[in-house]
Length: 379
Figure 1 (cartoon, rainbow, N blue to C red):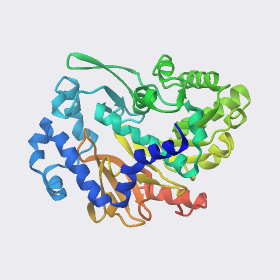
Figure 2 (tube, rainbow, N blue to C red):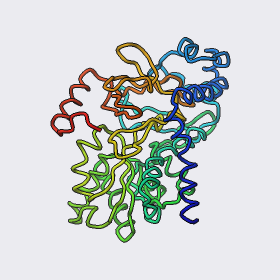
Figure 3 (cartoon, one colour):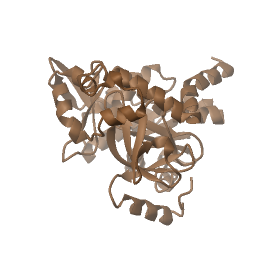
C-alpha cells in the first residue's frame, strides 16, 4: 500500500466521526433511529413501543433513564436464556467491570454489533497518524497491557460463554484485522489466568517485558494506572524504564480522569517524549477519544446516542455549554438510556472531559486537581 492509498483509507475510516462532529444534531437523530431498530427487536423495546417512536421527545417519554441496578434483573434473565429480552442478536461474550456495584462486578453482554463499534477506540491512533504523518507507528508493535479477555464462563441458556474484561475481549477479536501487531498476544495473557493480585499482575508484566524487550514498540494502549504500574515494575525488577528499552511514539490510555494533566508527568518520566491521547470509554462502550493536541476527548456522536442530566434538566451532550456539568446517559445497541454514572464537563465544542464519578464532591476534587497541577481548566 502506497502513502496516498494509506491516507485515503484513514480518511474513510475517520469520515463518519468527522461528519458527526461537524453536525451532531443531525447525526444523533440518525443514530437514535438505528438504535430504535435494535430495540424494536427486543422484548424490552417492544414493551416500550420502540417501533412507534419518531422523535427524541417520544424516546424520552417512552424510555426511562435506567442504572445498572435497574437493568440487573433483565441481564440476569438474559443469562438464564432469555436473550431476546434485551438483545437483538446473540451475545459473543460478557464483559465485566474492574470496579464494583454493591461489591460485585457488573456483567454487560457483548454482541457482534457492539464489538464492531469498539473499533472506534482506534480513532485516536488513526487521527494522530493522519495529522502527524507518522506512519512508522504502524510498522512497530503495540505493547499489550490489557486485562484478560477470559476470566471464566457464564451459562447463557444452553450455552457457556466466556466472560472477561472488555479491552481484552476487543483486542482478541479484532487484532487479526488491524495493521499493527500486539504483544503479548491476548491468548498468552489469558493463559496466565484472570487473577487481580499483585502476583498476577507481576506475571503479566514479566510476560510483556520478555515478549517485547527486543521488539520495536511504537504504541502503548490500555488503562493509564496499569501503564504506570508497568513502568514501576520494570524499574524495580530490571532497573529500566520503558523509555530505556523502546522509542515509543504514542500512548492511547483511558479509565481514569486527569491522564493529560495529573498523570502526564509520571507517564513522560517513564515512557519518554511520547504523545498521549485519551480514550473515554467504559465496559458499556467507547464513547469518545482525543482528536488532537487539545487535552480533552471528542464524542462518538455517530455511534451512540448521548444525553446528560444537568441542573437545568436532561439535554443532549452536544447542547451543553462550556463549563457546564452533566451526568452521562448513553444509549447503546444493548442498553437504552443507560446512566453511566460519570460526571462530564463541557468545554468549547466539541471537547469534553470526564472528571470522575457522579458524586457530590467530584467537582471539588477536579477543581483542586486543576489548581494543584496549574492546569486551571485549560485544554
